[in-house]
Image: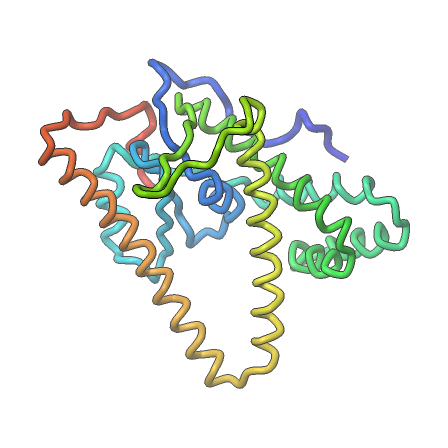
Length: 256
């Protein structure tokens, strides 16, 4: 079993200049760090803090070119499958139930390990919650190291106009909020995946084709809206006479 020192955490050397304060969308950033599918590319906007996701074969083929020419976008490097597999390996010995430990050990053997691991935990509520917390803590470590490596300081996101901001619970609550949000988001997402799986089993091939087509449409629309939102923001800045945004080192990286 590998030690924590072997984690493939982003290196901190290379950051230079003053820290740039960005209202990071933690939930979207966690999604981006967790998703390492080769056809998915994610970018952090250094002004709005939003995460833009571009899916090859779905988004406009020129999207990568436009993003690469915009220094306000920083390419996100997701956590590798190998490292996420190590997290499962490290979690299994922490399980008290010997029978569950055996099932999880068997589940991560071979192709499809991630899906089988989650399927086994679906029947063990308390251990599933512990896994969500365990994984979120490690994702948070990667995200913080990556932000520090690019001289980015995460700040609180502004409340929606006309919506009162929640009352502060003290300085300690701010530091813990991304973790609690990540845990809730992970639990909700897992429940939705289970419902979708059950629904898919009851549908015919034609229905499944229609659902897949609609899902691809939603992905493309989300990517297009994210890029359009950025340009609208830049137009507002220019109209208000605001100086152009600066770029931090690494902000103009091209996609691989």
